Image (cartoon, rainbow, N blue to C red; front, side):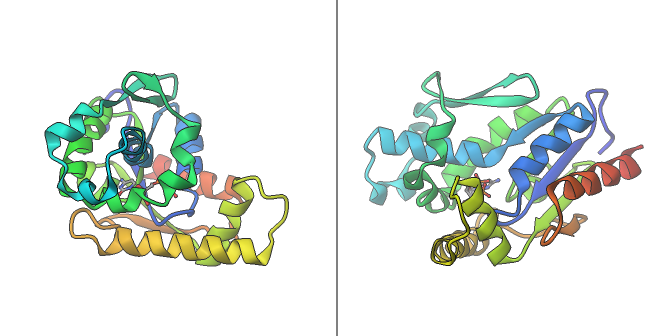
Length: 229
Ligand code: CDP
């Protein structure tokens, strides 16, 4: 893909807790591009279904029309997209354990992926985007200018998540429980039939285990400059 005047499209995929979202946000800021957090859209649909009291056993049978009626949308604002459900801004509520525990189950439903594909593609239509998720480089933006696959050891990812969630210490029991939850989500994301989590063709793999946040941001910014400069 030839970088448009708005700038290149950069994709960051990888398993849960590898630091995709925070890294993508900072890479976008440094390069003057916009950040798309695709996971937030899957979380928003999950949140909307919970809010509407739609029983979980119905989720896999939802039609495209029913999913669209939940009215998940996003609006470009500054360097990011604000996610809305029924016109109302949602943010913190997307990271609740109720949503996190159910989002992968919903993300494997083909109609769900179809419903969100349009929104994501529209976000990148003009270029100038850093998109993070599971299938950004493989399905949503296969023609991206730069593709990164971010990985890290499971335990390291769990430790980061526990700290990110505000726990004061790295209690081994809490970290082990988080590792289990992350591993379960990774397995669901990797084994599904539609758009499974995998390294996209042409992606550069970066292992962030033991890398400081600044260093991983720097590594990606350098890569983008090298490949698109
Ligand atoms: O931040 P974290 O990696 O934990 O999750 P996220 O990016 O917010 O994504 C939440 C969930 O949405 C993932 O576990 C996937 O099930 C789903 N997802 C997906 O299927 N495809 C994407 N492009 C992004 C997220």
